[in-house]
Image (cartoon, rainbow over all chains, first blue to last red; front, side, top):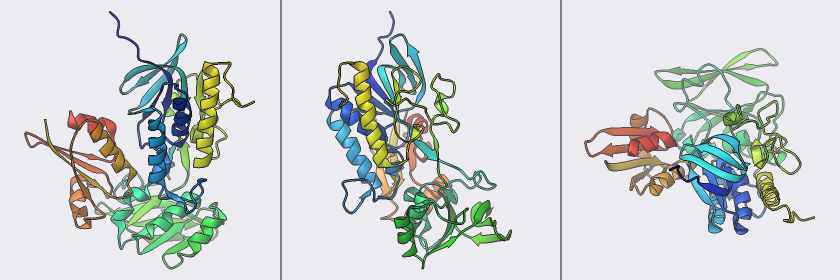
Length: 317
Length: 82
């Protein structure tokens, strides 16, 4: 006798802001919803120290607190959030079959909201000293650098935000920015300027190598691209915030079309090239990489999924 | 069988929350060492893990064998508590 298939209305791959928002919408309408998360529930929002631009929080909110609230709200309406990894999605008759670390699961519709992960520098010493002086998560590892010196690499919002966070621990931070200006928002740059005593910004500075001795990071070698000079920054640790890469490696052999940087292509209704499979949030081609837009896309995708499952359902117009 | 579990955490560490959620979902009890409250135990965490990071989860079995899982790694945690 065959094993009974586990079938759900919707399975969501990922449980970050996009999927949690979608799950709030689907479960409120009694659409049976399971989410799989292989990393942190709340995604990159959960590891962000502080979120100042998510609507509804006058003074901003801790990333972990926001993620926790999104999770609780989704679970309140019945979302089933499971810790595990989805490794394959394929069509199986009228259903979608998902291969997961917890076994196979079937769904009438799927939402891919796997978000993105930290981009690496790809320079000598980075991998050698990963976790032993090279880090990508300030809220995780900043506390190990009380009264120490740090280098932060990056010029965008994350690099600036997390540098400010790291001043709680480090005595001094050298912030290495590749370009001749920062990509970070003006308001964050304004905030950064208030920490001039602890953070020194170095423009036109490309990080070339992370150097260690006796198993510990001791310095970073960088090049000023205007002068050609090689500069050595003595440091106890390096935090890297140079952008994100989409989590779509598991889709490389699937029929789901990706764009030239690996993000999922979708139609205007958020559906991918695979029937009944939708995408939302940072993983979607054209996404604006904000928590506010991720939750908005999640809600939109949920309405589109509802319409997919019931063509007579309204999506507003 | 698992005799005891110790997790080294910090207050802002989201991966630490996930390890606790995972162990809770498996009905495993643990001792939490918060390195923000007890920074003097950072050296202990580093000695176990060889890394300046949290979470560090130390699993000790009835026969006193031990596993150390650094970070939030579902497959390693599952294997360690099996």
